[in-house]
Length: 560
Image (tube, rainbow, N blue to C red):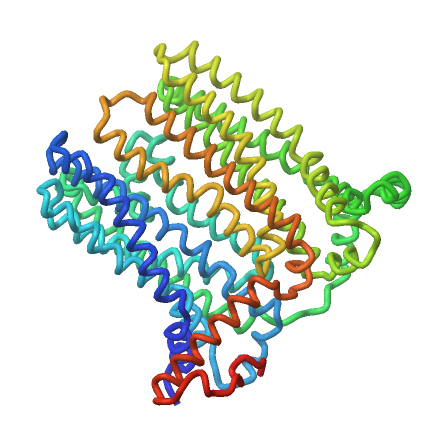
């Protein structure tokens, strides 16, 4: 028997999947377009190749580092928790398999495609060496940092997934852990004024290793670069060891104790209200729209927003009291508003994708579809429920944006870029919120689970426009005059165009394919493509066998 039998099986399955090969080719094509766009000023003789090569290395390397850092939440956060929800984890441990067999098989299976994609992109990132803008040492350090960051992120995702059951919680836990490990050392170093203790904590941040890739920074802190690589690598192995230890011990279901049942009853009473309140809400809203009644039942979700807003304001006030000059700058104010927008967008994406994914898993959608309710009534109830939950928080955040803008104009230097940034950010905030609602509803309906729907939603609405802006903005910044106004206009145009296309596509899908996606029935278009693919397979087999394809039988068209 092999030492890791499931790893061998997962590798064989991955070698048969078409997406294993399409991902490498597609990503290479996209990065090639970025490379040609960033190098276009040098082709025209406007800017020296060294400058464009440096910009290419920074943009492509930074985007690859961000994707490697977030890969744990995208590919491994739900790997083990999904097995627990489906009840297949116990079947694995009925055999001779151990915890490390399951953990390492998931590590290999989930990180195979990202690793292949990274290997396909690295040769394109090495092109700036030929232009003279990047040294070979910087490219070697970038390669080590990207591979080590991918391994670290995947290991953290498996560690969180080993102790989780819900995919959404595992994904949020992985994002929180990666954000804390990457950002908290920089925050402590900023607040402590680069003391010895804060510099020692920087070794735990993968972002610090990426910062030291630059030749100037590396010459000033070569020891810090290798210590950061080694520390994050050891943390990754520690996360894998914790996953191997926890996986065989956390998949079992235990009977709840009386204290746990009591707390669950109290939580349900607080979230749904007393029985009299529930009865009054049922009589008021059930006859109007049952879906809206389901959305209005949970009244605790607004409390989470007010709690988060109070905590966010306290942290901002604390930072302003300790560092008033640094925190009152335009950069600090923009970071404050951007982080607030990002948290609310992630919360909206999570809620929009969770609703239909949960109701589809529990069978609620099938019960709704056999009632006299139309699809338009279901969508109307869902949208009104989302509006009820998020309209007031969005108005409050828009008011906070206005206050931050006035604060920035009164405490920082007069700049025309700051109002433009805030106006563009507020407009994109509203557009992204509208797009996240519709994309989240469709992905929650069509994806396999809530975590996958959430990740696909933020990938389309938040990550994809950012990557497009990096490429287009890189060309503008390299070939432009150095002003920020063209970059702001590019950011605004890319975000609005992406949101418009996504809204048009997802609203059409929801209205036309709601029932087929909710019930899992194959659509005529998918069936046609499946028959065409079978016909092509049948034609090739008969042609290779030396037979007349037109004289053969059509047994391949029949379902097994």
